[in-house]
Every structure is written in C-alpha cells, then in structure tokens.
Image 1 (tube, rainbow, N blue to C red):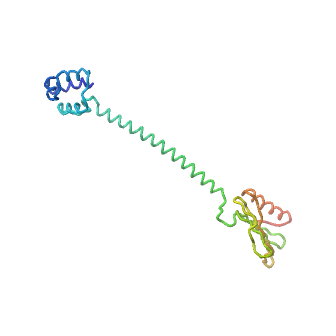
Image 2 (tube, one colour):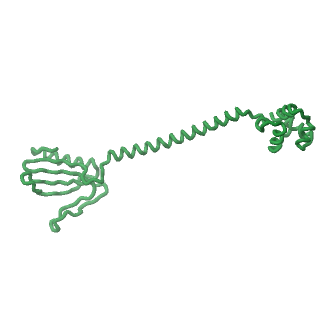
Image 3 (cartoon, rainbow, N blue to C red):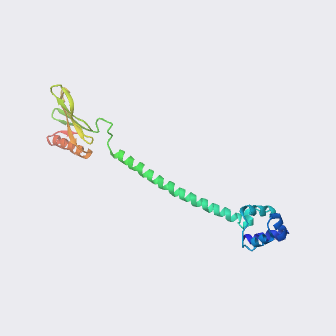
Amino acid sequence: MLGENIVKFRKKAKLSQEELAELMKVSRQTISNWELEETSPTADQVIELSKIFKVSSDELLGLDNRDILSQRVIKTEKIVKRQNKLFLGIYIIVLTLLLGVGIYFFTLKDFTKNNQEGIECELKDRIYNLMLSPGLVKQYNKETKKFEPYESYDNLWKMYVKETDITNDNVIYEIEFSAGYSYKEAMDSINLVKKKIISQGGTCR
C-alpha cells in the first residue's frame, strides 16, 4: 500500500524517481525499493515524503481517516462498555450490601433503647409490667438495697418485671432475670409469663 501511494503521489507531483531521490537525499535505487515495497522509509522519511507530496502521513500510509475515526469510535465504545459493566457490577455489590445491612438493622432490635418490648397485664388488684431489654441483668441486693450486676453476656436478653398494687399504685416488687440468648428466646419467655397471667384470669395488652 505504501509503495503504491509513493508512486501515485510522486507521479501526481510530476516527480521522477531521480528528482524525488534528490529531494529526499537518498539514492534513486532507494526510491525504487520503497515503491516496490522491498524496503520501507523510516518514520522521519514518511513525514518528509508527506511534506513533499503535500498530503498527510495517514493518507500516504493508506490510512483512511474515516476508518481511523471508526476504529477509534469502536475502541471507545468497547472501553465504555467495559467501564459500564464494571460500574454495574460495583453498583450491584454496593446495593446488595446496603440492602443486606438495611434488612439486618430493620429486623434487629434497637440496642440503644432500654426496653425493646413491653407488655402490661392486670390480675385481680395487681398490675404487671413486663419488659425486655438486651444486656446486663441486675439483682436486688437486700444489704445495699440496690440493684447490682448479676449476669452479663453480649447476646443476653433480660426481662424486667414490676408488680404494682392497682389500688394505691405502690410498687410491690421489681425483678430482672435472664430471658434468653436471642430475641426469639426472650419473646418466648415474656409470652410464657403472659400466658400464665391470662390462664389465671388476667388480661394483657
């Protein structure tokens, strides 16, 4: 292709091989070898030939600008597609993680609150407040007359029970005890107490 173009543009410029050789400062045989494509000019010589023929290097080399543009567009499209696939993959991963975290925290009880679940029951002249909360279980110390740490585990749930006299609103007793090592176990514990109260004729809400 290059050899044919050198011949074409040389003739278009009305130059003989000898005249072109003189302008390029090479032998006539070198020009002939280029045109027969037995040898090829260097990059600098291609630029010099382009100047002499008053054409672009791409045109001299036989590179169609439309083909070059098309190749560049295709290459750009491939890069964009690869980037889009990468971004889509990252987006899906991030979305999955966020969705997982959202579901986890939506279904998980808020451990920043003191009481997670509360039930109030009435039995005869008594009101029973049953509350669940995670963390430290305390026990009433008769000597110090204070609730002091009794049992503590990272995944422990406790149940707080307060019995109040409905007639004078006096607290009869308060107690905390382990309700289970998961939220489900804790709910089973509080529901067991609730059923016991109801079975004795009480009501809960």
